Length: 89
Ligand SMILES: [Zn+2]
Image (cartoon, rainbow, N blue to C red; front, side):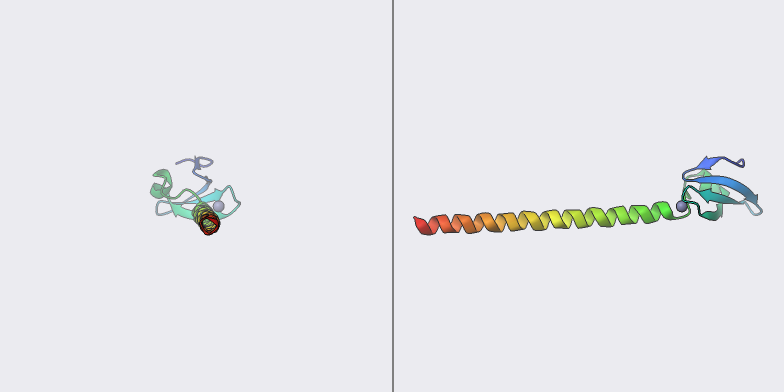
């Protein structure tokens, strides 16, 4: 591991004792991690990546829920129209 090397979103800015290193994330945060975790790709950011992925998942769920709600509303309207048509027969 060399200073300036990029791993995920982080850049190595300092090598610390006990196989640790200090990293600077693209978001501007500094964080410390174990070098082996960084090199293996287990530590890829200060934590912002995991936060963003959690937010993205939550948004995807919200969009899916809204889509399902809209589909259900449309189905209800179509059912109501179908019932109305039957009444006119
Ligand atoms: Zn970050």
